[in-house]
Length: 96
Image (tube, rainbow, N blue to C red; front, side):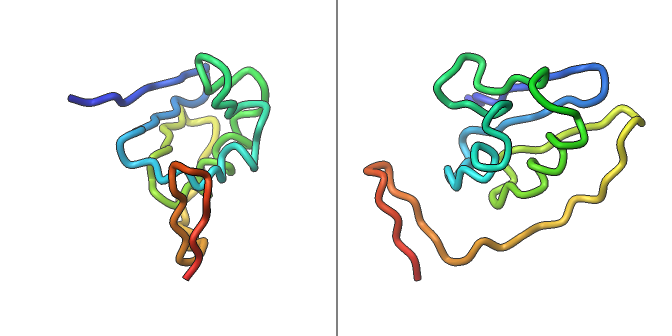
């Protein structure tokens, strides 16, 4: 069963795959007005420019967030390593 979600505006569609999300929270830290896990839906594309949303999604280390732009914005995805970090559900972080 897939729990994948899509969020769209006229310029971009954001795809979220919760099953592969590692909860590094790069999206929430980068653009908290758009990515707010305390709200439903947790992604609100009206709160920032599509360019800023794409730049934030590009920081997602797991690939749980991705996007498709509709010709207004072009940007090449670059993966970024955030170190050896594991986040547990008990809100503890293990670095190694």
